[in-house]
Image (cartoon, rainbow, N blue to C red; front, side):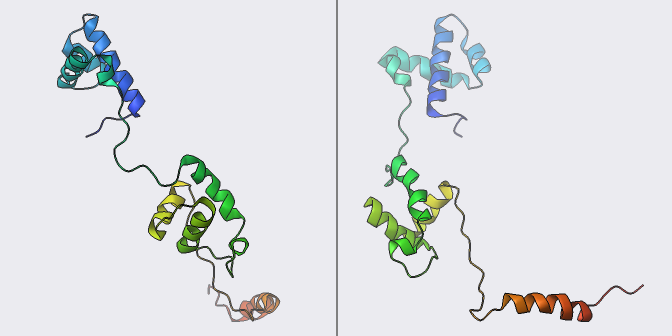
Length: 159
């Protein structure tokens, strides 16, 4: 299991362990103080002895780099807040496919619509479905009905 902490924090822990061993602390004591196994302390000590201090440097996260840079991700909310009609769509309803199209037009990056959902989640945006309402809906008539008709036909508790 991966230890808790950022790569930089883990690097500091490795360097601290090697410094404590060099200062004369026992490997078991260093492991106990730093909350790691004694075999890790031995590996770190030996790595520094063989390859020097750069052996403990934090390595970049493996995997493909993200298609959207941090700057592009920061631009995305501003682009979407313009509204869907500003981007040439007929309605204001956003779909992941439409957002992928906007990202491609504005930022020149092609993303799959499934990945767009993950990007939006990372930006703390949530999926929201608009309520379906009839075009002919008359709010005033509904309010009158609720106030006068509904109060007469609504069942009440009997004592």
